[in-house]
Length: 146
Image (cartoon, rainbow, N blue to C red; front, side, top):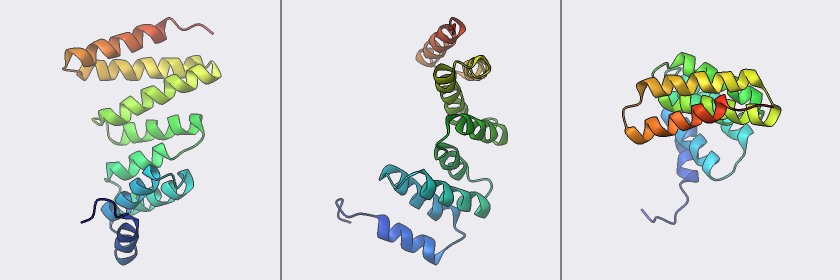
């Protein structure tokens, strides 16, 4: 396959031929995200993937990622984290988005959510650099004053 060839037509064809194939839908949604098709198109595809396979974490991740409103995006990451409690990537996104929301809106509840979630990640961290990064994030957030 030519590396310069755009995979979009093949991905769209796969979804058209298999409209309930969550993996195909996620592949197209991911391609759309990476090529700048916008959050609405990605969110619609992610919702279709979730409906086709509620256990498809990639669909849930794209669904949360595609939310434009920061507060609603945090709420979506909370839903994904609750649905998949061992999904550290979802937790990291929840914590990062909560910290961003806290900074933008001077929201202490969002700071607390970020700290709580980073602590959850810290409790499961095994690599020294991971632990150090999480310790630094927690320490920094604990000092925030608005």
